[in-house]
Image (cartoon, rainbow, N blue to C red):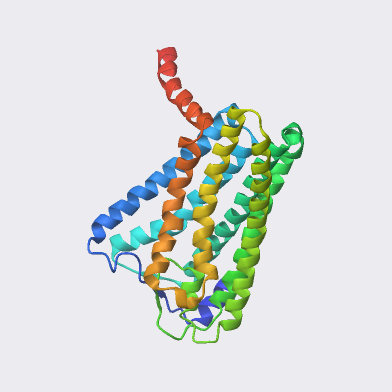
Length: 320
């Protein structure tokens, strides 16, 4: 018997009820429009960034390869939750079936775990580029980039396969209302009528490990980068290195800070309202901010964008 069938049988086909973002809002229609616009901005911004990286040969470097992977993850990340939230608001429903909840949880946890390790891979790439520039093309060749990216996706999926089945197989004999707008692990666990303390300890240790490894790589990489920048004689090289580092650190701070709050702080520190605000921040706002951070602060990306926009009129003149 597959796990989806087992889960549905185990919970007697009873659907969950997502409380959602709109119950406490005084202007749900306006909030829906804002979320929809943010969703479109996230999809278009990340899709444009991927298109620029793919179409411009000057951006065919390891750093931009990892940025394109981050954009892909962000597009999938926001697509897991927002369409369901908006569709439920339009149709006036708030239920989600057990298989749908399990699938949403798996994809969400997988993408979050993958992004943890991808940010560490991006930090390592910057470390090699700045601290070992002469060996950069050898150490960060195409094969190595594919290996690192595949490893990020694999480790994220391990996270998803580890948390989702255990969470969804707890008996849910309390209220079916999930105090959230999607099936996040801590929110679903609160509905269980069995003792989840051991699982919470296990989840805490796993999250520490999932965060500790990338944070160690990131902090170690940027410590070496700072030392190298300090020794640089070129002011232009120092400025460019600091600009690259600051962009990445902004993304790291946003994403890891929210993850620490969600999965590592004790249950007493959480309230449904706080949980939803933090989740909105890193599931809806972060996918919008990432392409802005990596494009507006990056001359190469802005140059590629101007080149693409200028190519339109030229193409029309040639065809006419």
